[in-house]
Structures are given as structure tokens and as C-alpha cells.
Length: 273
Ligand code: PXL
Image 1 (cartoon, rainbow, N blue to C red):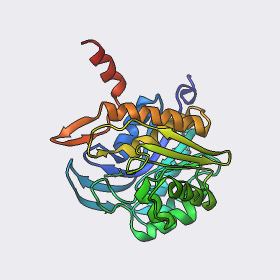
Image 2: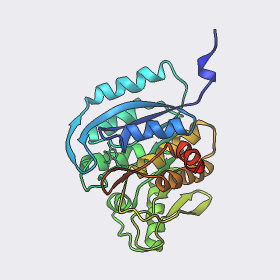
Image 3: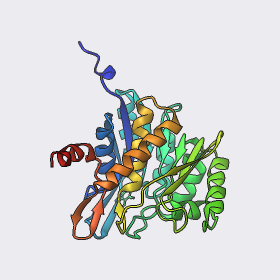
Image 4: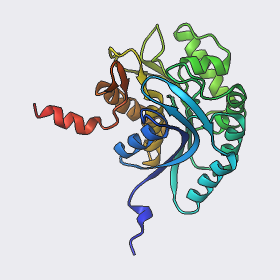
């Protein structure tokens, strides 16, 4: 019998469901698939949302979140985990407890949706700092999240780098603070690990906001780690992937753009003309 475990790399996202499939578990899966990895999904929260608003959130029983992780672990050699929306402290702690030691973890500390809807409550944010960020191989806050978690006001490149240092001191092996929300050095991400700072420059595209960009970035990092890339290389490749997924963003409702992890197919398609 063929050993199916040897045919493809596995990565698992532990995050919230976005019914519009522009962010959350759905975009994570699309991203992992596009990166050549078998994406798996541990449903940790549910959202009812469309292209314009988040209508409601429902919790998932933390014990059931653990059961999903443990059941996957019994059967698959998961190469990397990624966390996204974990809406409260009980869920964060349950995830930290169930995650296997030694498997790399990418933590995307999702706190607030692009559309200003609170996705993780205050106790959840504290728990992220206490039990999940310290075991991350890389943590990927955007500027508002980095400012909320670190209590450092981020107003320029220097304070952004200072906040990166705060995450490193929390115990994360590496941190990327995403520059998409910056009004200085825009779209330049600050990466920091024990070897120092690396700046990741991105293209600034004329979209007001892009739904799912943070999820897509963290999922692409997780996919590349599952494929065996060292963290710095995985982050660089993910940045490039995300740039293209924004370049080919889907306007899924008038004026509402979401990531397009399927940009490779679209690129081929456009080249025909
Ligand atoms: O982009 C952050 C995010 C993460 N997870 C879920 C979301 C969103 C944004 O809307 O809905 C489930």
C-alpha cells in the first residue's frame, strides 16, 4: 500500500470560519492548497459575515477544539500549525494545551476584523500573550494588533521596531509586524529574529482595504514551513505570495476586495490576452 503520508506536506489552521470565505479558515485552506500543501482546518470559532459586515459570532466548545487537534495528530504528520481567530481565553488555553510540543506554530494574533469587528475579547488577547505567543516560531500582528498587545504606540519605523522587540521578549522566536496599516514606510513589514531585523518591502496597491490579507500571509508562512523552509525564507516567500494575491484581488462585492490565493491560475489566464 502506498504511504500517503509521504506524498504531500500537511499544515493545519486553527481559526475561525468566515462564511464569506474571504478570510479565516477558508482563505487559509485556499492559500495552503495554492502553496502545494494539504491544508487542514480546526474550527475554533464561527462567524456569520458577508462582504460588508460581521453579523454574529458563535463559540466552539474548547473541548471540541482540542478533540479536532488530537484527532488529526493521531493520523497525520502535521508539519506546521497556524492559529488565527481564537475568540476567548478558554479557546486560546485549550489550543495551547492540545498542540503537540515540537511542531512549529505560526500565531496570527487576530483581534479585530478589517471591518472593525472585535474577533478576540480582552481575556483572549491576554491569554495569547501568556500561553501562545511564547511558543510561536513566528507571530504576525498587524500594527493595531501589535500596539494593543504590547501597549506601545506605533507611530513610526522606530516604534514599530520597538514593538517587534516586545514580541521577541515575550518568547516568540520571530515576529513580523505587518506594515499594511502604516502611514509611514507603508506596506513594509518589520521582521525580527535572533539574527536581527529584516525589512520586507511590499507593493502598495490602490485598494481601500483587503479582506483576509493577514490570514493569507500567516497561512502561506505555515505552508512553507510545512514544506521544510526555514522561517526567514518562509516569511519571504509568503510576502511574495501575498503581493500577488493582492495584485489579483477579487472584487467579490462592489468596492469590496478580498485576497485571491488562486492568482497563479489567473496569471496564466491573463497572459493569454
Ligand atoms: O482577517 C481577520 C479574520 C480572521 N478570521 C476570521 C475573520 C477575519 C476577518 O474578518 O472573519 C474568521
